[in-house]
Image (cartoon, rainbow, N blue to C red):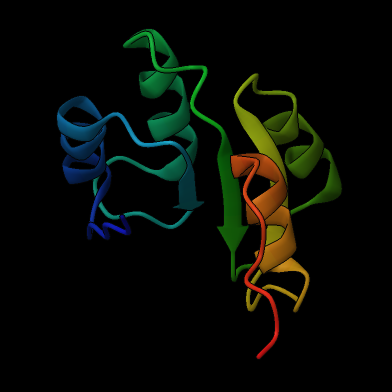
Length: 101
């Protein structure tokens, strides 16, 4: 089930309460930033939850590579994500997209 939160602290609480199968993370979170959120997620023993990072801002290639080295980060994408975003999520969740009608 899709859950959305407005800041990093609320996201950490949701993770604690619900143990999600996947997290889509915006780096520009108020309060706890996206990178700090990743580190705190790992410190809390939740480093195995796959994370897809989205960012609307321009990020240097070396910073993107550093973030992609985090153990639970599976992909780093710009906003808006491309049409293949849904397929990426299905692959990470090991689900199948719906058949066309």
